[in-house]
Image 1 (cartoon, helix red, strand yellow):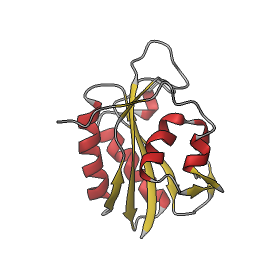
Image 2: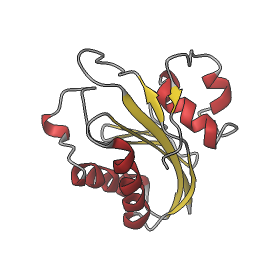
Image 3: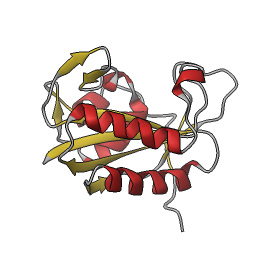
Image 4: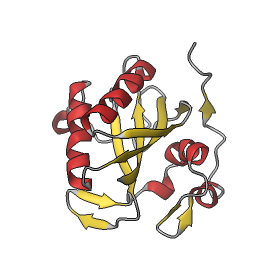
Amino acid sequence: MADVLIALGGNVGDVRATFQKAIANICGMTQGALLARSSDYSTPPWGDEQQQAAFINACIEIETDLDPHALLFTLHRIERKFGRDRTNERRWGPRTLDLDLIAYDDVSIDKPELTLPHPRLFERVFVLVPLAEIAPDRVIAGRSISAALAQLSTREIERLPDPS
């Protein structure tokens, strides 16, 4: 079984409800086991900050027997199921659901369709904050999550209360 970190994000619709359903789909469609789930965080848009709502972000840790490429394919299927159309969307624009494969064990892949670990992981405080909640000591590409997070400002990240 591979130990996998996945980041979830979205800013269209009831994102928190979408996360709950998407996580169930991820576990079911990957025949995976959910090991950890972070809190949800409100975060400012990244990359394209113009005229879009704040995002909600979270991270999960799962175990799965799927290989990295099959897992990525499955994550993209789940995104489509929840209304994401990667072919017709604005880069870094609004979306119902974004699922990013952050790390897959200690696997390193650099192919056009898949780069592991995620190439912008250490630039994205909206990923590092929820990751630090569930895996602060995890080392990815020679850096621990907590050490990478210590290099960034978290002032615009707000932990959301647990849903009732």
